[in-house]
Length: 315
Image (cartoon, rainbow, N blue to C red; front, top):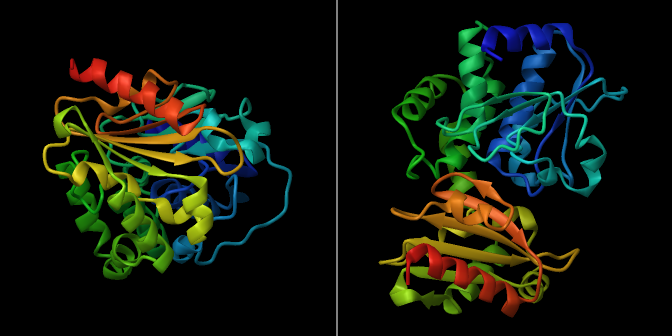
């Protein structure tokens, strides 16, 4: 599907339900509300949903949003590489997604039609290309949504997925009234006391393996309950392990609160492929950032992960 066909899809369908992935980040939220504004501008009814309430840290992206009631007829997913990432609340739509707009090379192809570009720095950048290509009006709020997704998925333009196109798009978006200084401060600088406490705890208990090539932090349910930190505040925590000098693979284990097992967030540098690593456990993502889930106790999960790291590093 090219952009001309995508526009025709939007013009000929109605009553959109826009799905975002659980534990939402800036890209899925930005993509969802950017698309909502685009569809509203086309005279369409739409609403954006998530497995849980959207985190308050993204409330500046909801500007002007109206959650109208209607029976969805067109299901669209944004920044969702695998239908399993929708979560239990939205599981009824897993096999009903008609269109997926994404940028993950590991996209499972679960939607009837898919627009995926693994070279795009964010899903919002794919949307931005579409908007520019088809001459769709770009409002300040759409620009803010797109910029937020682009900034968060590139780590404020410092991750390896930051491309010349990403910088050019950011520069063009900054010409709009998006208050990019405040966006970046909210996304990267402001942290609650609870989040700072979690960072301190996991840093103090950080584990190092294979001569420092692998660094691991663990966020247990006990720590989450102790600090009372909302899951939304864990965005960006996975970058900590790879900050250690000499590390080529950084692993963050976060224990599920509502079921047994752990969520893994993996960050890597050359020569380790994070997506290939996580595919061993049924996950995926990008070359330098990926994720998966593993069942078991903390000790069992650590053993499985470290054995996989050993094999990947050839230790």
